[in-house]
Length: 112
Length: 117
Picture 1: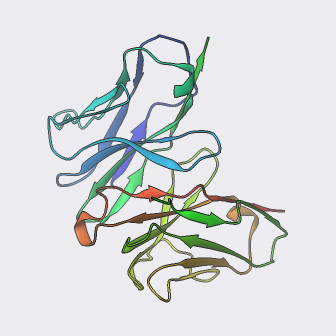
Picture 2: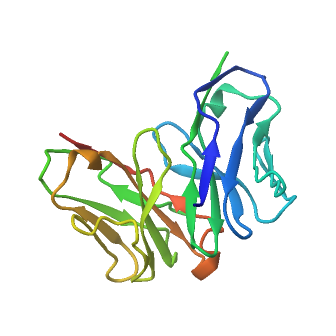
Picture 3: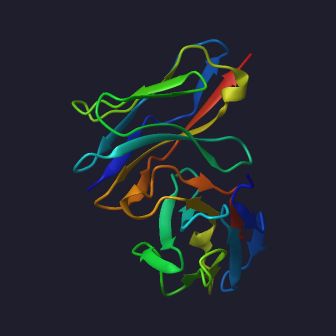
């Protein structure tokens, strides 16, 4: 069935390190892809999205490219900050199911 | 613009008790969602409303969970009776989009953390 697979956390990085969080999906049709972020004690916030193949979503220095050939939407950031410490969720939406399906989340911890 | 409001933020109950959560979506948002987020997992959709009608409740355990959105604005989610496995964060989200465009952006509330003892 349809699903989203994210790399397991926690991911611990030093400040200014390069970040990659892998995400792959299994879905029929042409899903829209999303990354959500959940800071401690807060609700989920949309970080970035891409609605068709080869689109690149970007926000706050984070980027992810919709790769239909590999069914992936990996999240990257060139230089992380302590304030990026949060849980990151990959998700997709298809019109067929008409709902968001989330991955299990990846906790990122950035240290000085 | 005010965000999605939820209350209470925390609730502790014993099993077999009942509990209710409240959500006030962003003004004007037609679509409202309730999600269950168990520790270590991603949010799982329980029910989706469009205005005051149910669009999808396929994942709602209807023997114990119920939800309503009577006037197409606020919504309540109720659990009766609660089980230990209901311990989770219950998230409410809203969207201005309708139909198949409903996921263009969903705005989430801070959630209600439920602990069932």
